[in-house]
Image 1 (cartoon, rainbow, N blue to C red):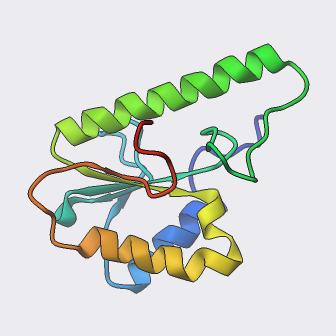
Image 2 (image 1 turned 90 degrees about the horizontal axis):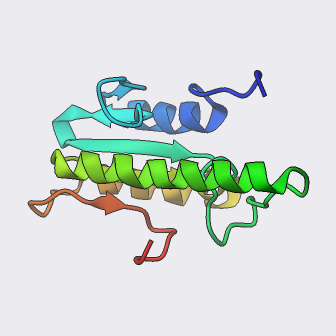
Length: 142
């Protein structure tokens, strides 16, 4: 597990490269904010998290499956990760940020272009006056 990256993963680099090519400037992995967001866009008051489907227990995703061994450990760990994410996102929203979550499965080749274009639109859209969490792939009750 020591070889698992915590930042600069291939999907993070993919998202950052797209945003930079499209003229957006940002900070990466800024430790001043809860959760050390992958991308911070101060001009747009927007934070982007690029989540791996396994590590963040993406519900109803083909890329996520619970390990068959050491089930108790993994269940607790993944549940804790999800709870920590929710608390951090709530704190950021309370501080006036828009939070956008991009999932690993949304960056698969067949849907990558559309998701990255939608991400750009979500960032640059005129905010409706209040912050919130933008995550198209999870049910609203989560």
